[in-house]
Length: 212
Image 1 (cartoon, one colour):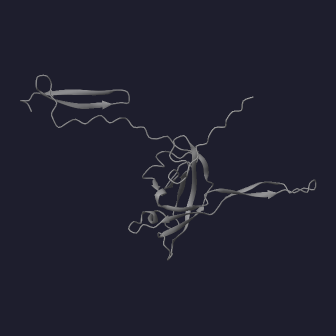
Image 2 (image 1 turned 45 degrees about the horizontal axis):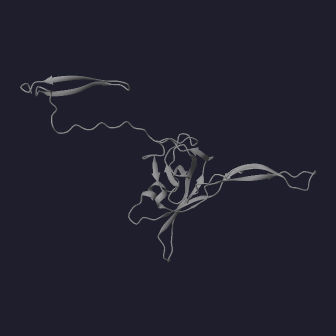
Image 3 (image 1 turned 30 degrees about the vertical axis):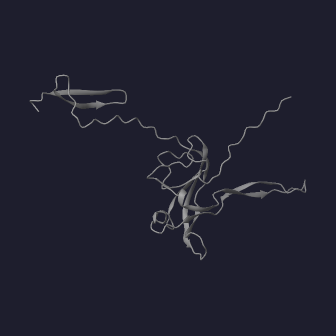
């Protein structure tokens, strides 16, 4: 009897892989779009984050003991989000992060747990409001930081799908500086009359060199 070897996991370190974004708006947290997780709606916080706390759901179980057993059974109760925060390195000359995360600011903290892999069900979207933002002070040998505490204002969406990437048509090569000429040496001007998704029509007007 042969035993099948279990598949090997592709384990990874979150540092260098996971992404943390601040989004101004999200139409449907269950299905964030590629446009929504791209600039200018997106502000990438990843490289400024020093520490992260929370960003998970917790459940408050309800105990349901009964006279038939000495075991205290329970059922799932209300869900709640743990206290969540991000600690940032403080930039001496730039205020970009601080300007986007003032006290009271509303938006979405989005975590791409496995990185930007289209189709992967690994996006967590948290509707939030900035509760506090305060610098941390220390005389120790460490970088300056500040901490932002968030309140989760609505039910987060977990395990959303990373949206597909934009697909753009190839850009045709630009014409050089030299004029295009026909076989007789006359200058040829090309004017595009109309374009559609399936067909491009053009009218070609030829001008003799003498007329130009």
